[in-house]
Image (cartoon, rainbow, N blue to C red; front, side):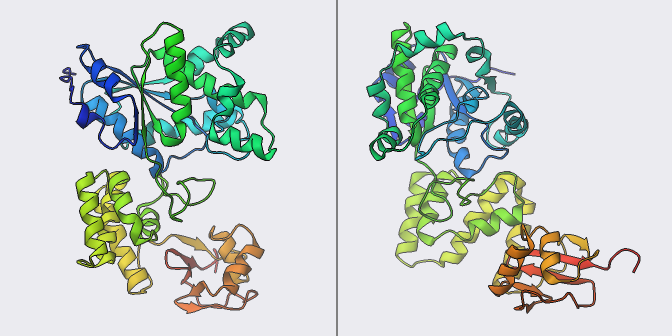
Length: 403
């Protein structure tokens, strides 16, 4: 592959970061006349990535396109500790089996934004897994308890009397050592990772390396419009979710979030996001139309233009025009199910029969477009029939085999 000319345009490379420690150091490092070693670490804490991860991955890709040496560190070792960042309680450490299972999909999912031919992927067990207890003690001697307690999450938990396990203190230390291992010039991360990044800068200085530049991106607010996007909270859009699901979820965000999603999830320029905000606030365009365009643009990044367009058309038919879809609906056999609630569980729309009955009580369940309001309603329709929950979940019920 032909070498990419190195970009030294600091303004271009730092566009979209909310904190840089420090810009002067970054400009000086660019003048060294060599590609910078740029690092990003992500822990395989779940099997799927979501749009929040893509914000910083997009910035990493920019450095790769600019000809710099880019390393994506998958924290298979640090995931076994558990990242306490932004947590008000201990994150349960993952088992090796959970970590291995989660890592299987990370490369493919990161490749939705990253050109993996330009990016080196490494696992921090390469160096952290080789340390003995003596090595860990030496590493811990470079940081004080007072320093660690300055972190907002630790400080708040300590002040409230919430337990902090000693192994949690190891997380920022281990992540900081990653920067030494790859001799990072620049480390990227979310704004909630700033303490960890700055600790890496301190460690490098003490180990005789040039201290890295720390650059953080804003956290993408989740679909609830309040907390950062998180799978554990449920306010997320998953990268591996279907185009229809992604589109439907994106259409649920508040109008006030559209400029933020345009900037951080669709990767538009700040000028474009500001123009959208002015258009919405000035009432110069239909917010629903703008949101559909934005959702289609984001979905296309992960599923392609054709599926994104189909997802939009599906949304317009089933949600806006309230039509029952005639195609692209999964099918299941009635089997032994005798009640509507049984089929809701069989279709995966409810985790249990009791949960299914609650859905029915909330008037969110329909059969062929007709609301079912009896939680114990028997399944009486002539099959095939369409069972739906809300405006986005549909399944066609087929006759039981042999009937």
